[in-house]
Image 1 (tube, rainbow, N blue to C red):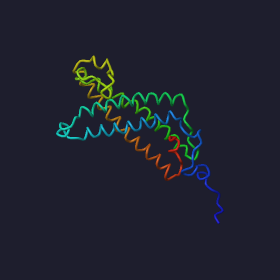
Image 2: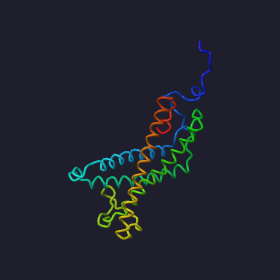
Image 3: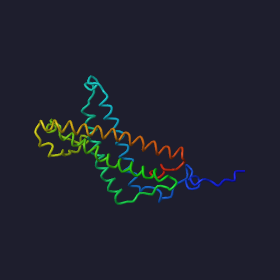
Image 4: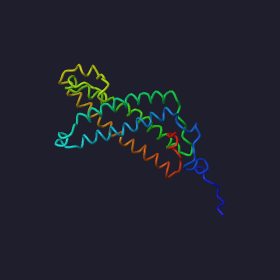
Length: 210
């Protein structure tokens, strides 16, 4: 017979499949915003990377302008949802992480979450600025999903063509590098959640599910 007492982890962490109490979950609004932003971001990443990887010959054969405009429309939508999410997070305390996690794990999780919050705002914001500095922007109105007219940043639209070229390139590079950082953080975020759920048997996914 095993006379050793159960470990603190096994005693404190509910097994996989056990329902969490409401106070261990995020609010419904936070859940909706989280999954809406996540799905839209993943879709936009797929569109952006596909366009970037296609050859010029292939781009000439498809309606690339449709996909670029869709990428912009999704990005602006994400920006609005991200701002709402940050405001909701600032006014509604999220459920605390269980103490079965080490102190460094809780600190790393908080840091990763705040970096993700920053990026889901900065990434679409730099994309919007990049588009606003486009020399041809004045003759190509920004219309979200082909339905809703949306303004560009006036101070960038007012620049000379030479200045627009400079800022268009710079902001495009910032947008791209922010995307690379986001890819790394998303991989760590998703990988960490799956590890805790399926290997460590901590029901962390239930915190963000109804």
